Image 1 (cartoon, helix red, strand yellow):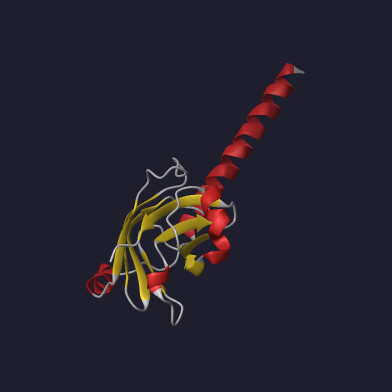
Image 2: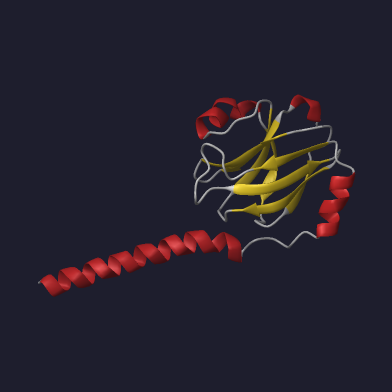
Length: 157
């Protein structure tokens, strides 16, 4: 009986480890096409705003983080850096800077959804037409699937 119990326990542990590894690796394996560093540099050159995503935000942790620089011009948002892999990441512009899930949820209705993120080593996203960037103070990357804060950064002109 104890052998059956040990085998059952080890199989459950291996199954759970495989499931966790799959959840972590699937977004990496299915990520979109890489963005050229030249394209990011073009957005940087014409940027009206820039900022920094830092992995040391209050609600960032070992599995949910981002670090690097971002640039925003009239038409595009560009990010040069790294994000922890994960599913269903979204980029929002928000009227006030936040560092926690609760703070973001309190103002999510006022946030501008820019788009879905499908790369973890740099990306660009087109801005919605007619967006007034002066109405926003920060950018945030949010995991929609798990309502998880990834990172945020101030917009600097």
